[in-house]
Amino acid sequence: MFSWTPTQRNVASACFASWMLDAFDFFILVFVLSDLADNFHTSIPQITLAIMLTLAVRPLGALLFGRLAEKYGRRPILMLNVVSFALFELLSAWSPTLTAFFAFRVIYGIAMGGVWGVASSLAMETIPDRSRGLMSGIFQAGYPCGYLLASICYGLLYTVVGWRGMFLIGALPIMLLPFIYFKVPESPVWLAARERKDNAALMPFIRSHWKLCFYLVILMACFNFFSHGTQDLYPTFLKVQHHLDPHIISLIAIAYNIAAMLGGILFGALSEKIGRKKAIILASALALPVLPLWAFSSGSLMIGLGAFLMQFMVQGAWGIIPGYLTELVPANARAVLPGFVYQLGNLLASVNATLQSSIAQRFNGNYGLALALIAGTVAVLICVITFFGRETRGIEISGESEA
Image (cartoon, rainbow, N blue to C red; front, side):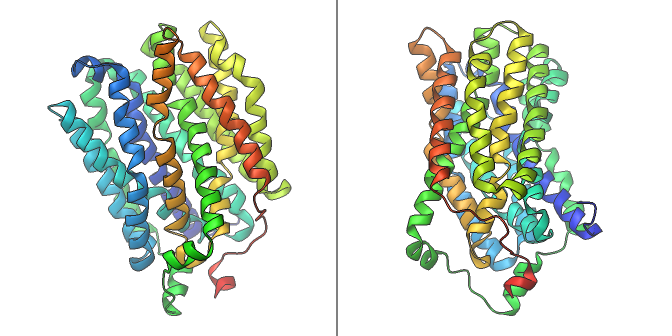
């Protein structure tokens, strides 16, 4: 990382920040589910449909913005993405009805769906090949870092600004635009492909590699159940089942998001030494012995420790994914296909919050049981599915090597 050029560091910073601020806007919602239920006179499971809708339309955003990025470049489409998700986060604050709120979250989800694929391709195509594992971990750490920022804002500002004010704060990502415009160049891989007049032939690639695409969608569905199944309802679990106040919930969320960032970077870097597959399997397997402490302990200290360890492992496994997916596809589909299969996995996992809240209600409000059932199941599935995948460590994707 210290041998990167200033331009490479600017690109890495901008891509990390884009994904971080996108996640920040998404996770504001999970802290105010009960407030939205009270405001719109409905139940928490009904409000969790907003999470499901946001996740369900993200494949559309990945396809739309990914195709635009293949045609017009990573940089301008990333800027368009940032403007879009910030705007509809802002509009969510002014929702007069539950229907309007759902509509704004759907459009926000489309905008959110494009960021991961576009930003990750720009980052992975710009930094040195030898640093891809580390950059993968750093980039994916933007997700828990966004959750961390949402946690801090919730702890410090919620009692002052309320739920509408939290969504207003979500418009701040717009401030990233000047940095991208003035400091971030276009991907050298995309520029080289444009000179060669390569075409972004997505559908022929999917048809000829349908087994790989199917494999990746199933893998990403499990990964999205892994992350959303351990995050989206966790603040509600702490508030409703353990009756913790916003300050304590915020502190626990801050702790487990710091752990998530550390885990993503550590396992991302480790994947350069032991391989992508082994690093993913190791992190996922280590989440299993943490389940009892994470879901069934009592007292804020033990709950916080369990949450810290769980997110270290969950996001540790996730830290390998940006680089792993990028290495599996060719340059002329790299902005669209990794993000598309990722978001298709999200579509399959979009029922998570509603599923977990329904399980909790069936078992007398036992959110801990619902969380543990989903997290434990998908941790095992990730280990098994990854075992049968292809190792990609050491693949070169720099503009020069692909040209």
